[in-house]
Length: 459
Length: 124
Image (cartoon, rainbow over all chains, first blue to last red; front, side, top):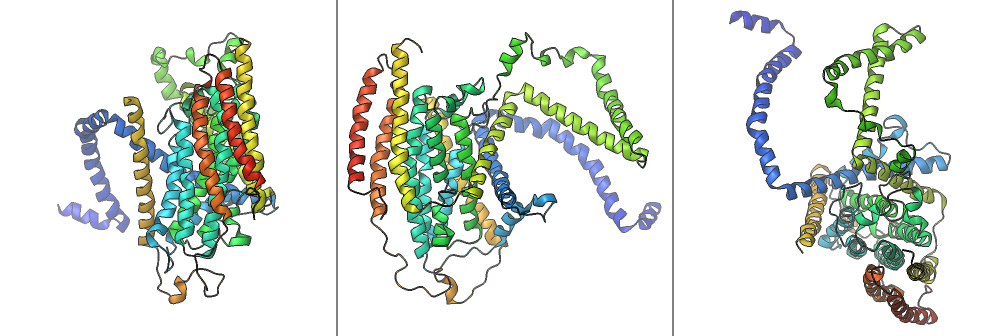
C-alpha cells in the first residue's frame, strides 16, 4: 500500500490527473460496452423499431434544422467573399484561412448581443414576427427533395402546400413592420407585403405549365420525371415558365434587384429597423435560408432536381458494359479480403511516401511516411466517396442537388454584386403588366401544345 | 385517406419543432447576452437620432390596399387553375377543358384590363 502511495507521490501533477482517468476508462469502458451490447442497445433498437414513424420525423426535422444553419453561414460567407472579389477587394480574411469562419463568428456575435424591444412596441407580436418568418422557411424545407427518398414528407399536394406556406412570409413581415411602432418599419413592412403579394401571382402561375406536363402536384414525382439526359429537364420544355419563376423567386426572396424591403438608402432597414440581437438574427437567418430554398426550388422544378445531367445507364448500355461494381464481390474474396485489409494500407502508404522521399532531399524518412499516410487516407476517403456515389442513389442525388442549388445561390449573389435596385413603381408595374400576362401566355402555349399533340396522336 | 393523414401530421410537427427551435435560441441568447437599462431615449422609435414626433403608425397610401385586394382575387383564381391543370392531361378530349379555361381566363383578364385602365397598376 505504501509503495503505491509513494510512487503516486512521485508523478507530476498532470500524471495525477491522467492515471486515475486511465484506470477509470479501463474499468468503465468495457463495462459500458458490455451494457450497451447486452441491455441498452437492444432496448433502444426495440423502441426505435416500434416507433419508426416518429423516429423518421425526428430525423427529418433535426436534419433540416441542422442543415439550415451551415447553409445560411455558407451563403453569407459566399456573399461577402464573392461580392468582395467582384469589387476588386479581398473581403474577410482574418478568421481561419481566407476568412472561412467569418460568418460563423458573426453569427455568434449576434447571439451575444442585447435583444431589445422598443418601449411602445407590441412585445408579443414583436417576438412572434421573426418566428413566423423563420417558420415559413422550415416548413417549406419539408417538401423539398434533396435526393431520392431524402425528403421531409413527400406530400402528394406538394406544390399547393409550397405556395400556401410560402405566402405566410407576408404575415411575418407585416407583423414585424406593424408591431415595431416605427415609421420606417411600417413602410418597410407594407412595401414587402405589397411586393411579395404581387410576385406571388406570377410565381404560382408559372408552374401551371409544369403541372400540365407532369400531371401531378407531387414535387417528388416532378423530380423523378426529369431523370435521364440534360434535355429531359423541364427547363427545355418550359423556358418561359422557368424564367418567370426565377424572376418572381428573386422578388419573393427579397433579393437584389428587388430588395425594396431593406432599401437602406430609403427606409433604413425596412421592417427590421427596430430589431436587435437574436430576433434580428432570425429575420436575416430566414432571408439567407430563403435564398437557398428559392435556388433549390428552381433546381427541383426546372433543372432536373437531383438527377445527373448524364444518363449513366444509357452510356454504359451503349458500350455494352455492366457497371463495374457488379463484378466486385467482397464476400467471394475469402482469404484475399484479409490480405487486402491487412497488407494494402501498408503497401500503399509505402508506395505513396516513396516518391515524396526520393524527390525532396531535405525530407526525413518519418516525414515522408506521414505524408504518405495522409495521402493514403485521402485516397481511401475518395474511394469510399466514389463507392457511396455509385452504390447509393441518394448520395449521388444529394451531390448533384447541392451542386446545382449552390450554382443558383451563386447567381443570386452575382446579381447582388451587379444589379442596381429598381424603383418601387417599376417593381409593381413589372409584376402586374409583364410577368402576369407572360405567365398566362405560357400556360396557354403549353395547353395548346398538349391539345395539338394529343389530336395528332403523339403522346 | 390514411396515406394523406400519415403525411399531414408532419406539417404540425414541423411548425411546433421550428417554433421551439426559434424560442430555444432566443432563450439561449437571453441567457448569455448583456443588458443595459439606458435612459428613456433608448426605448424611442429609431428616427435617425432625433426624438420621434407625430403618430408612429403614420398614414400610408391606399395603393397597398388595392394591391392586396387584387392579390386575393387572383390567388383564388389560381387555386381553380391548379386543379384544372391537374386533370387536363387525363382528359379524353383536351379541347373541352382548353376552351373552358380560355373563357375563365378571359374573364380574369377583363378584370385586369379594367384595373389597368383605371390606373391602379401604376404606382402613385
